[in-house]
Image (tube, rainbow, N blue to C red; front, side, top):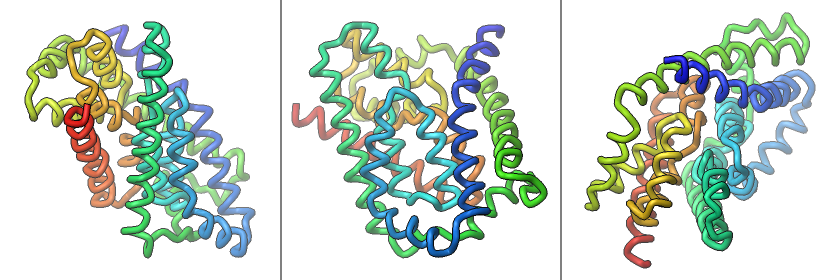
Length: 280
């Protein structure tokens, strides 16, 4: 139990700088940007999936959390959010580096995730391009959602209030998730992934969705032990966006949209994982 609390606290503290920067950006947009500048931001959103795919590949899940908040305020598009989620490496990169995995193998995995994120991101933006405009009211909705009374405070104070609200939520959620994983047992989850059939891809993708680093750790360790295929590994790693999915459900009040985004991520992992194993 002490380990569950300690791990949850460490994971939460790591995200605080990302959350604070995100909310400073949102507060600045709401209070300082003119309508002309907001329009310029909206028009440049079409390049978002490229930036999202590249930033998501950096060895930290903080960008996925940042992307969830920015999407909830409609500063970035759905395609950009999905590009970040699909390319996010979470714990995969540091684990593989510590195990001295061949750098060419590591680069192939990262590049595959980036390309998958960019392609799927652009596809989603093409489908939903009619509803991708940034508006001041949508940014204001984020403030209303947290009941932070932003209009009574300056940008920095409002950002700190937002950050504290989200940090508390993440800490509680992290503790609960760690306890659940502890009760179930990582070994039991790993054993389920050893049954090599079509349903294993569905399970691997589901394990990756766990809003915690445990999912990517399990998937990566099984792959490095030659217990699962590269396709099964990718099915799990493509959906492993850390706490990004969790924050999406916290900050975006459109639950149908959240479920749709999660489903897109989930089935993308399954489909690409199967395709990779067929081709290799």
